[in-house]
Image (cartoon, rainbow, N blue to C red; front, side):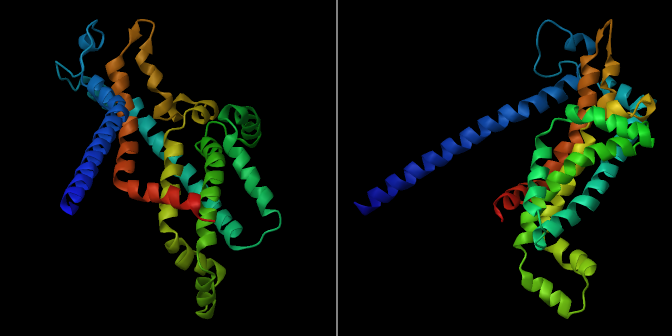
Length: 285
């Protein structure tokens, strides 16, 4: 009788695992299909991409859309601009966001709850609401048409995210580490870099990646503050394939794939840090 019960339990558990696996595969297919469609369209010819009959894979494989993108001098210039804006905004966000999170997490600052609430409120503001005041300010101080303008605007949204994410991390580090560091002769700055940062490495990696992606994916700020076309990033130059004679969808898809591939690679190789960093920061307090 006992063996029959165990067999029934194992069979039920096995069926449940199979159903969960099938459900996970189904959900993965739904989420990954847009990426597959993006890549599939990028390898199609003009005739096939404009054809009345929808094809789910390239019947005539071609690299012409990719060659057109990489051979365009404006593309390489836009790629450089995207990298510069993303790296600059990430650097500004980390330099200001991480120390702020450390101060709010490790010390009792008067009005810290009000500051934290202000950071949370800024996360809810749309970018369009900030464009006009930022444009007027950047125009007066001469930041229009520079890489620093959009980088500062992007970091204004990344810094609150970093503070809200890393503050629970710093708050959760045992105070005994601070005491041990002071006994060993470490000052505040050395203790911050030698002890605190390594202790919350997962959270730091998470905010570094998110800050970089915020700059890499930006369109609104770069289009508004970089009035010079030669200083616009990849996201702002995709309109070049649209004209009064039609839209070159295969070139647009290849262009989009170039934008998406770095993001996908970051999440594939660093997903354990991103997932654990976001979830741990959400529950620590």
